[in-house]
Length: 347
Image (tube, rainbow, N blue to C red; front, side, top):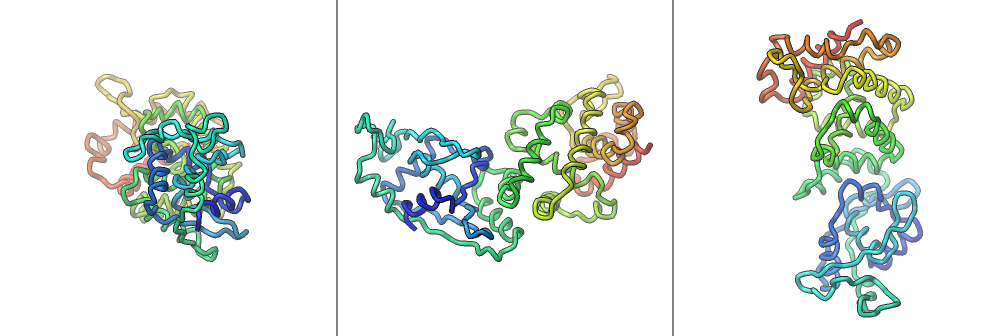
């Protein structure tokens, strides 16, 4: 299909490039400029994969950045609120250094615009499309998305997961985004910039929702944690979750934890009588999920929760001493930490 045809589909709202993805995986202006250079040089582009929706429109599964760049260069790309984004201004490239500062069309300075012939060349350039039929299940689309984005990709597992959650249910993704921005959650997990940029905070939100009430026998059989989170996330976004009650319990849990202090997910040093170090998954599984399991009680009796005291009790337990989780698979660790947390917070 020609780029001109794809552009018209986007104008007619028949092609969805998911502007939310731009926050997850953003190209630099240099990367975008190299794409335009490739088109002008006639270099074939990789295939774009789209999935048919029930309404007949196309969701871009793989190729979001390529199509978004082309639309942005033409001044047509919209954000997730329907506002036009500023047109892309190219940077110099290896083979076409004269592209420095060039825009699609500038009526005031033709020297900084593509020529009419160049614009036609781009519109007529072809892109190979692979279409996933609407009959395909969300799980099949997700599996394909993972495979396509696994080869040489810089996306983390959670970023890949987020992209398919968006493709499956934008409202569910927006709800998760709202939870991750809850101030008490932000204060207690206190993640560094790298983990935040990789959406690890969003993964922690999902872990809380998925494992908060999961039966012990089910915890023992989760297998690979990443694959389990993928499956459950897709299930939640497809079949739904009681967002009002689960969102309330999430906020109640982290409000109580934040009131107790911001060290609750760090390791307790008995010799120095203080919590220290950075965020630990082990502590999160014991404290957040333990309190969350009993939150309906503690929401009415927050003074009885004493998270820091229970955290100290956990770390003073010799069976969870130094080296407890070293080299241990996450699912194996969880079979011990999550039940222990529920036991510690038993009213």
